[in-house]
Image 1 (cartoon, rainbow, N blue to C red):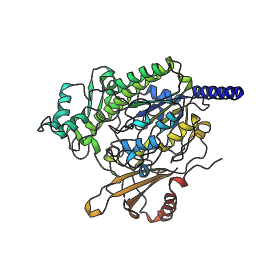
Image 2: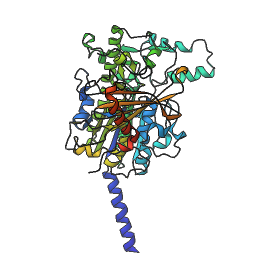
Image 3: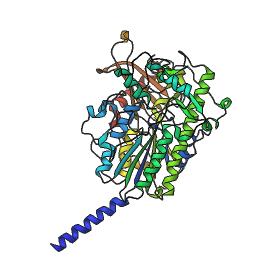
Image 4: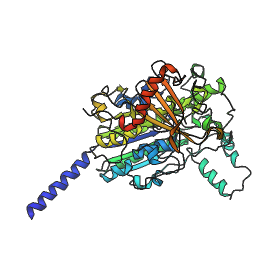
Length: 505
C-alpha cells in the first residue's frame, strides 16, 4: 500500500510539473485588420509591434477566414468549426443555439489545467460565451469619440424616442460600446473618423491594454499556465484614435485603391458598395469621392498604429515579467477589409480583400523565426494548431487541421484550397436567398452562388486567375475557353474542405 501511495504521489507530482511546463498562450484578436502592415510588406504602415511578433514567429501570407464578418468568423475560430456547422451567418445568433455542447478553444484549454481569461472583443459584441472562461470576461467601458460635437452626432439617432422606451434603452446600450452593432439607417451614427489630442486610454483599446498588463502581472505570480485572450477593436469603424497616430502619416502620400470599379462579369450582388460605412455621418450615397477616401484611409492607418501601440504595451509587460520565453503568441484579424477596392468599403463578401486576413504565430525557440509561408491556411486551423503546440489532445469535432508542421517547414506542400462563404438576399425577382461558397486554390478563386435551400441550384459562378488578375477584377467563368477549367474546379469544389486537407508525410 505504501508503495502504491508513493507511486501515485510521484505520478501526481509529475503531472503537475508537466502542467507547469506547458506554454502560456497570448491570444490577440484584432477587429477589421487587413493584411496591410509592415510584416506583410506594407512599409507605409507604422506597425513596429505587430512586426515584432512577425520577426519572432511565422507570418501566414494566405490565411483565410470562414466568413468575412465579425460574429461568424469569431464563432468559427473559437469553436474550430465552419459557419454551416455553427449556423452563425449573422451578428445576432449565438453558436450554442446549434451547438449547445461544443467545446470552445477556451474550454478545451481550461479542461487541461489552464487558467483561461478574456478581455476586449473576442466574441462579437454582447455574444459572450461564459463556459469559455475561468473567470468572467470583461471589457472596460470607454467613449467612442473624444470630441463633444462628435458625441452629440452619435447620439442623434435617439431623438424622438422617450428615455424609457425599450428601443431607446437598447440603442443607448449599443452605442455605449465601441463595437456595438451599427444602425441600419444612413448617416445615423457619429463621424467615420476623429483625431483628437487625447491620451491612449481615452478609448477602449487603451483601457484593454492596461487591463491586460495588470492581468499579466497577476498571472505571472501563478504556477498555472494561462490562456489570455486580448481583443482590440481598432481599426474597426469609426476610425478614432489619438492625434499623434494621425501625425505619423502624410495625407498626400496615401495611395487610393487602383481598381475603383466592380468586378467585371460578376453578379451584381457579389460585392455591395457601402456596408456599415454608410451609417456614419457625412458619408454620401454612391461612390466615395477621392478626397474623402483619402481621409478614410488616413483614419484606418492611424487606427492601426494606435492599436499597434497598445499591443506593444502588452508585449513589453510580457518581456518585463520574464514570461515571453514560455508564451506562444498568436495574433489574428477576424477578416479582411476593403478600402475602396471594387469601389466598395468594409467587408461582407467572398472576395480576396475580405477573406484574406492577417495571422501571425510566434512560438519560443522556433527555428524559422521571421519566415513567411504561402501555405493556404484557414482560421478553423487556429484551434488545433494551438492545442498541438501546447501538447493537448485534439477534440473530435474540429473542422480544421493543425498548422504546426509549417513552423518547421514553411514551404512544405499543404492544403490544396481554403474555403469561405457569405450569404446574400438578392431582389425578389432573382429568387430565394443565396449562399456564396468560395474556394481559394493556389492560383484561383472559384465562387459558386447557390440557393440556400437547395445547393444544387446554382445561380452564378465567379472565377478569378490570381496569376494574371490578383485583384480579382474580371471573372473568367463565362469564357468558353475556360469550360474545362470550370468543370475541373467544380469537381474540387464539391470535394469540400475534407478533400483539401494536407497529405500526411
